[in-house]
Length: 218
Image (cartoon, rainbow, N blue to C red; front, side):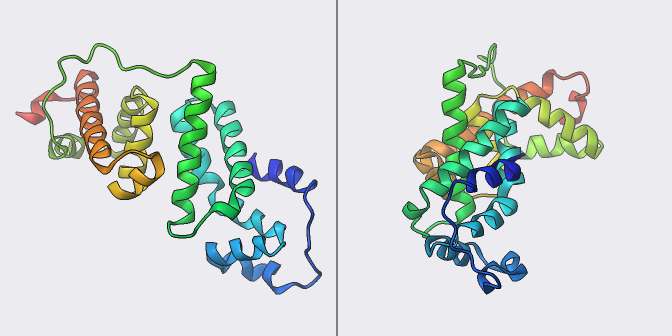
């Protein structure tokens, strides 16, 4: 997994850790991201392991949603943390560290998809239903929680990679439109448009599923 890989990665890094250093004590787990980054920049490179442990599940889960393949997602996650470490001096701190990691994850995932020529496509959706978020919510309210999650996962997996990212960080991670724009490099208007289109696609996909009771929308 990512932590094991980073342990190997750091073997080749110069470490200025001293025995009993308070910055690297157990209390490090309670420090905020900016304190840890400050320690890393001061030469205490092993402090990066705390950031990795804090965010590895978040990065991996997002990469897995986009890549749809565990092996590829693990490779992306490893690349993300190596890239983030190498670019840490460029992190200005005006955004959350997690948002910065999301942006790297987004870019690395799309890069890998492009290399593998595995960019998913969304076919046969010319006649998408006009839909708003309340319709989707009303439909989901009629289903059991596990069924909801299964149907949504199947539907989201059929979106394009960029749409999967936007839907995931907006609905599941509760990031704002402005934060998503910062992560993707899109304008806020473009993010809103893509989010709206993704909602329509999801609704059309969910309508086509046998488990979906269309009568609930009448």
